[in-house]
Length: 404
Image 1 (cartoon, rainbow, N blue to C red):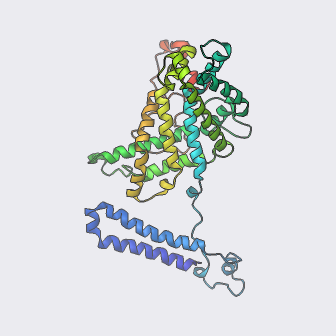
Image 2: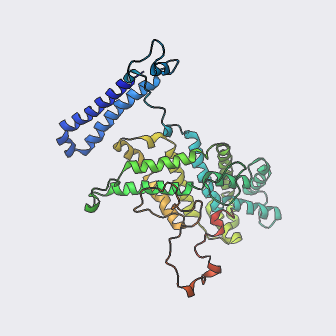
Image 3: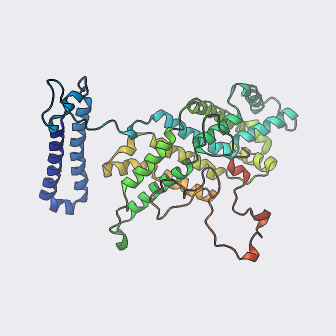
């Protein structure tokens, strides 16, 4: 177990090593900037190995207190000879991967719930029970019967909506007693996706624009890592409870619903080619909704990929070359999610803002509410002349989870 004197001497040697290496390889470092990353990584690994070895040693029974205060035979005659622990386990390394993967799947489910897959099946059930459609004994008709009979064993629609509100802050459903809506998720998620997209746009630029040549945040992995850690820490506290088992059950339910909608007799009933065509026809014909199937579905797929990536230890990688390679896995997913969310009005591209306010007061409202840009005040005579009593800019009810 290192004492205070050894600890200080070790840090001084590490600092001297950095200065010596930098001085001797200064010419090579200018010609090859990636060499600096390699050298920094090797020295950091040397430091971390010493810290890890110190953590693995068993402390004395009194934890070094007698040595520090001068009691007994082990009393130290100088402060430098007292025990000094170097660190404890880092906070960002204590997140469970399984729970974050469950949150990624739940986000995927939420987007399909907003599309209206379950509502389309429920409408078909109503029509089937009423005899209002030409279905009798086909595969789809029998699957509708089974879907209805199994409903008493599943989580209800109210349970699903409450889970979405607790996990992501989406919708208006009441959360279970003792919990609260995760109102910070959407702003943090949008911020992280923006930083990933912005990082890769910076990376694709061959020559940095002259006026930004000294911008320390240009192509910075630290900005992306901080945004990702904020989002991951936010999900950590909402991934407890029944989220894991709920997403398993609802994923089975989603698969069953899609197979029903894609059965031959139901597709023939509406003259549809795929299950997605059936969903859109039912939603347009019986609910009169504006269809958002394509962007919502891509948001579900891309968003799940981004959240799954956060569940892995890639975010803790400090070497630039490795981090860029690992981040490339979600680069296109981030751009795709951002573009789809922009088309629905639930996200904006952050071209210049690379930091998140500590209170997140300037973040967009969580959930699926539309993001509106501030407008200049209208003249006094024109105020209040908007449609529906000045409701301009509000999100439709189905985007806020009122109808799912």
